[in-house]
Length: 105
Image (tube, rainbow, N blue to C red; front, side, top):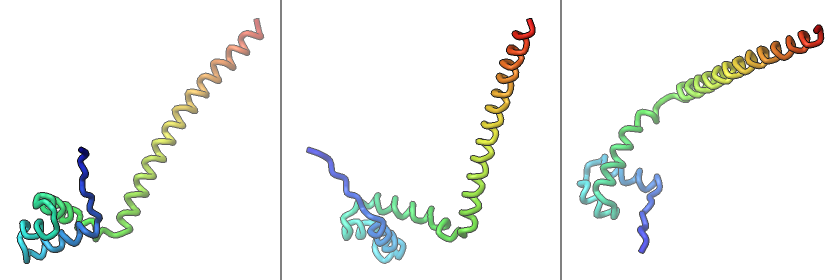
């Protein structure tokens, strides 16, 4: 026998959470009405309340964060390329000096 977990879409979760926020019915009543465990409703409600402030963040703040992350990544890549370039220059210098030194003797 296999376990089948119910999966609820965002619309359903939002409807249940909104009902719980209205506080017209108890969590137990909502659980019975929507056929969901009471702990699940409490968990969805907590999750919704924690994420609510982010709904009102400006797009500019989100864009600034994305730009900052991209900038950090580009700076990391530049640093890596600089290290690789310096290493190649060093190796080229060693190889080049060996060729010069070998032809003069």
